[in-house]
Each structure stands twice: as C-alpha cells, then as structure tokens.
Image (tube, rainbow, N blue to C red; front, side, top):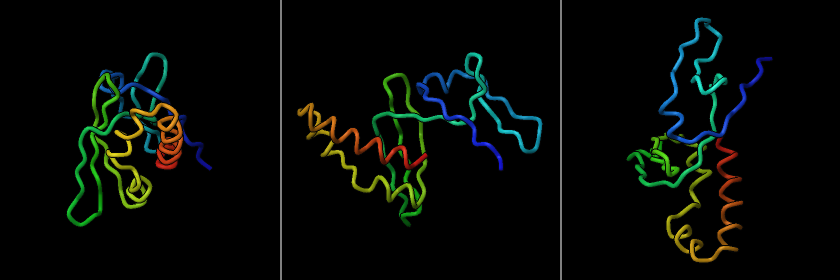
Length: 116
C-alpha cells in the first residue's frame, strides 16, 4: 500500500512563491520546495471571491483568497454536492453574529475537510 503524502496548511502566497520540482521517478510525486519541506499536498482555506458553474453542472470553478493572494480551484461532482448548502447570504448573515459564525465555521470546516 502506498503511503499518502502529508498535507500541509499553507498561505496561498507561499504556494505561488515556491519552486515547483518535477520528480524523476515514475511513481514519485512532484512537489513544491517550501523551506525544508517537499510539499505535494496542501490544505488551503480562503474566501470565495468568484464562482463559475459549468453549463452542464459537471464542475465548479472557485477563486479563493486568503488575504495573501488568490488561487483558482476546480470542484468535480461529489465535491460540488458537499458545498451545495453554502451560500453567500449565510456568510454575510453570520458575519454580524460571532457565536453564529463560529457554529457555521465548524460546519463549513467539516465540509472542506471531506473535500480533501
């Protein structure tokens, strides 16, 4: 059984400023050089600043911004279902209510973790 690589939590700007290395071996992962780490999996969190839904519903493209930079992501069928209940209005509603936002954030984090 192949061991899954560690997923690092990184700022988006760090992702953009790392060197990308193509692995020499057929079964080795390509990676980013970040400090002393070889990063081939990352967890990124940010605000959705733009969303595009394909006409056929096959994918959704999101641009995430974490305050340091932004990155485009693509979600496929099962991942789209996982985020279907998240609406901009909910984020705005909970923004004014700290306790409500903390509850919503925990629900949202659960959905994000399942996407990985």
